[in-house]
Amino acid sequence: MHRDTSDGHVNTVVYSVKGTDGSEEKGTFLGDVSFVKPSSLPSNFVAYDSLDEATALGWVKTALGSDRVSEIEKQVEKNQVYGKPF
Image (cartoon, rainbow, N blue to C red; front, side, top):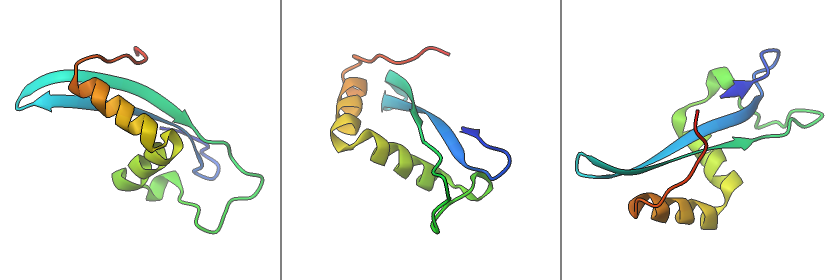
């Protein structure tokens, strides 16, 4: 994650989706999602230091949308993946 250290606002989440069949890895998809910092932080703001994996994953899935999440999952299952190298 990339964040603003002054207030803990998360600017970018880099994620990885891996498909497996038992112990065999079938495919991997890498991507990132950016979040625009509002002029004032909302009452339900969660700072970086208070984040857990489930919350961050929820943000990514919401930002991508259910159709895109399904598309990525299908690509990983079929070993037809693309993404960004690091």
